[in-house]
Image (cartoon, rainbow, N blue to C red; front, side, top):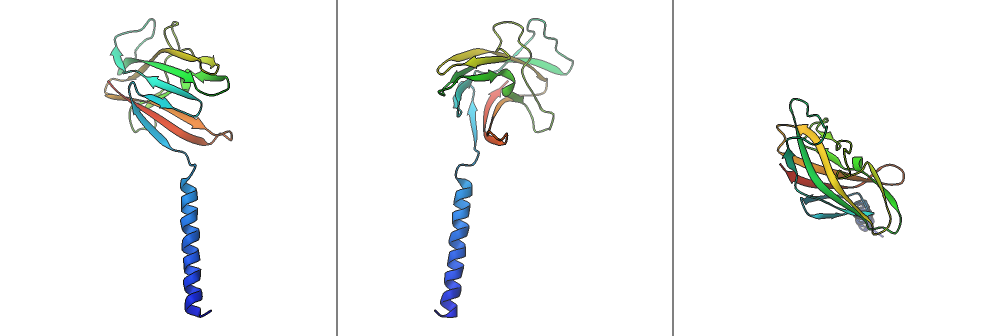
Length: 165
């Protein structure tokens, strides 16, 4: 084999190996999904739907600090897996900006209308409730974020539901 043919074959092999590595890196990796209010989001273990958020003046005994407003939205979660799993209210983070501190979780439940802190859902079972949160008065959008995790604790797929206020 000539030097020219050998060099070409070596280059071609390197290109094929690189292309294969790039394809494999893109397969099976974590992905991000965006939805809007009232759209159902399908995760690995459950489906969830967030209703449109609304600003409210008060809710039970929840105090509203100066500079904040109170918002609420309905959320429904259905276990689509074959096993019973706990659903935590705090798994659904609320985000409103790009800053490191522009997030919160819903307030602690004040009644049985609000989503409980934790609910064990058997296959096919659902839970629904309000999430009530304190966010800055100047926030005009609210994003509900849910992050799946692999067994080793690393991040898997992320899901975002954009709600307008």
